[in-house]
Length: 266
Image (cartoon, rainbow, N blue to C red; front, side):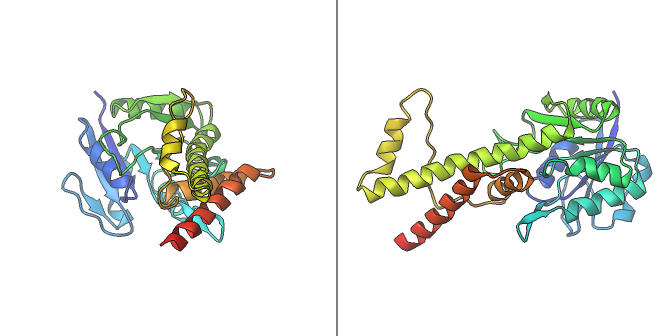
């Protein structure tokens, strides 16, 4: 059985459980890297990139923060790590699990001379790591055939099931589409709740009744759409679109109106 030496870059909400899962797989040695010191009993960690044994590393798994700055995608942390890898070990496989806009990874690969790169966007949900943790069906898109073969071999070794897609771009779009779709679903429920209450109707009773139909699943309407992923990714999708996006715009506006409505309700 092949052995793997792996660096997990970014030890936050997704990166830490990912690294700990990988560390528990036979035949894999894991090193953790983050700009802020994070401790684990399962693998060594460092904030010093140069301390890592780059000449021996087979795979870099990247789970760094990607977000928004001034309404545009902020990929500075990802770019920083990719530049470090390009200098230290450009022949290693790079697996980006962070969410990125469509086209970003191929552009980085071309600019930095990266030869082996896959995108396996995470589906980790901290709210239920048992059912929606690291090991679940994942999408994998690759830069080229060599990257695809090595990426499939690595994730099969980790016993993580894969759905292979034809390109990096399809994998990138899949991730942001998943979260944007969820955002729209929740925004509909939020707006429906406001409409129901304006008519003195019990939203929960309406929701339960509607959900008795076989193809309907209206979600709960709670305190507004929070967290890091859904609000960011619907804006990523809107950002990359070369056309008007009235549905996405409307969902964002509906959620903002709902949050204001909730605050006024006290």
